[in-house]
Amino acid sequence: MELAYNMEYLNLLFNEVYKIFFLIIPVLVSVAIIVWFDRRVWGLVQKRRGPNVVGPFGLFQSLADALKYIFKEIIIPSSANKIIFILAPIITMTLALVAWAVIPLSETLVLADINVGVLYLFAISSLGVYGIIMGGWASNSKYPFLGAIRSAAQMVSYEVSIGIIIINVLLCVGSLNLTEIVLAQKEIWFVIPLFPMFVIFFISSLAETNRPPFDLPEAEAELVAGYQTEYSGMMYAMFWLGEYANILLMCAMGTILFLGGWLPAVDFFPFNLIPSPIWMVLKILFLFFLFAIIKAIVPRYRYDQLMRLGWKIFLPFSLIYVVLTASFLVYFDLLPEKDF
Image 1 (tube, helix red, strand yellow):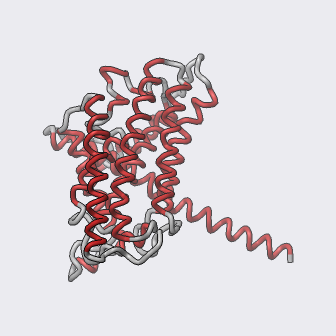
Image 2 (cartoon, rainbow, N blue to C red; image 1 turned 60 degrees about the horizontal axis):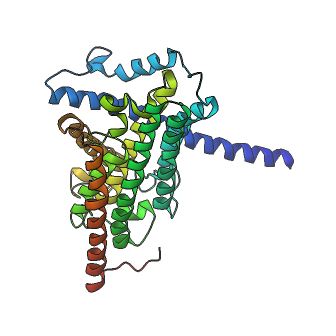
Image 3 (cartoon, rainbow, N blue to C red; image 1 turned 45 degrees about the horizontal axis):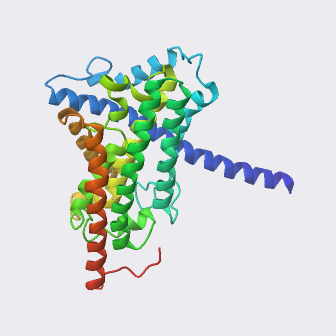
């Protein structure tokens, strides 16, 4: 009896580990691919070729970079708090991967289809700032610390706007479940009635992930390399992986909240023959293409401009739009009959 119980427990454990690897490996591979895609877009904008030497079309350039980081020496400053210094990149990368557990690629292809998926993502993204603060503080250097403080203020500021933007979507759906949010867009994608919120969400995503033109924590002319200044080797690569995994996550959230998730762009032949996960991936790539284009063509903001945009423009406009959305739904009796 005890042996049968142990075997059942081991089978359950194996299934959970299998699911975790099924989630982590595709995300890591996707990060390598979008880094290559990012560089190719920059090259296209600047009339360069981009990665083109390592492998066909330079596809193995990200793998070569990863191997370089693995074999580089990890240098820890003598005055640094070594435990926190080591934990910071681990926390950043782990949280970036854990957040993907609730992202549905189709109606059935999701690791954890929980009813509070939106709250789960908020909790994980809120914890992400700790890795950056820990890395900047533990380095025991002024420049990383200033970069970490900048990044923390920036991420917290734009999380507020993103949260209020998502309220507009939740009012239209009546559920915190990400799958139900996608299914509610069968008739019309939310990007059409909530287009101003989509634009603000996209710009806030750039600031939330420290992407240009809001990469103030890594402003080379001012702060050398921000909170990553004292990091090297694989520890630096963990920050890098976490950053790109977060960028992909924001693209996935934008797809789910506004672009209909895995739903086809046009529901007739031959578009409805394309598998749901392919539609999801194509939409994520489209949003990431916009991320890459903006990095190549938009100059960096000043920090005061960044804060003013978040607190004096995006926040009031988002609050006003919530009131307008709620009023419209109540007036036309369109509120969903569900409990949050």
